[in-house]
Image (cartoon, helix red, strand yellow):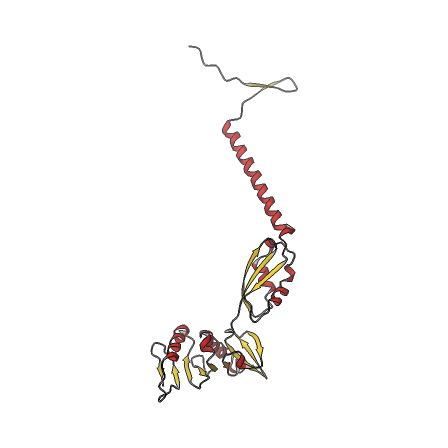
Length: 257
């Protein structure tokens, strides 16, 4: 029986006249090369498109939209962000915006959204005032951290309690304890308070504009105490036995007298 013939081999002539054998490349290897070449081409195109988007003047910032402001004017925010104007939107990060707004103490946090082709939408989350602190002839609006947000000559216009003495007179610890209590109260109760004081961090007291005293105690269980106080203030009052003191220092066993 004749032996099977060997596969034909292509002959390649070298310039010197020598003959070498060249075997055909396997189909699997050729296919992998084509796939890799195609993938590399796609990646190069994507990288090019990304680079074009990041640096394209078409996406340059032209309009800054500001929402959520009350104590700080939108124009102030826009002015602070002016260095970003003309910069492509993909190059602008939240940290860039946050850094430029650091000098505006009223701004607690921000949310940023790029709206192509040329608008940056900035939602401002401001600090919330919880009390007034008297300074000379003016009153400072402060938040729970004691940060001054604005000033007013008329305390009645703010509908906020006055912290007796302020941080400079009563000390930072007592001030923070008092401010933390006020920060737990809803706006409708804050509007009914005339002033707040603290003999110690465990003895915070509030005064209503009608003259009643609220014995709050320390800053623990603030949310529960606020709910209990709100319920007590909504309860019917006997004109013959008016309530002079609301004691929520032990919120699960509140006392009125």
